[in-house]
Image (cartoon, rainbow, N blue to C red):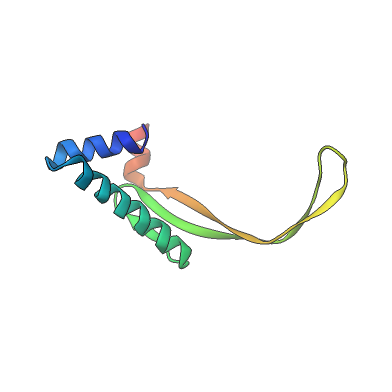
Length: 90
């Protein structure tokens, strides 16, 4: 399933135009992204929690040359599934 499939489902449920359904899906995605950018946790009941995790700087190796390289600190998105989602997938 991709974004277009989700837009089609929202369109079917709401009974509005496809453009309105696409704006609704875009708004949800943009809200999650902006919340994560500002460092907040985004919790969606029945789905899960989106959060950011800090990765410290570390040393790594170039697999081609074996040379040691420095990998900078960064933040990454992480997702914890809700119990309802876990139970539905079982």
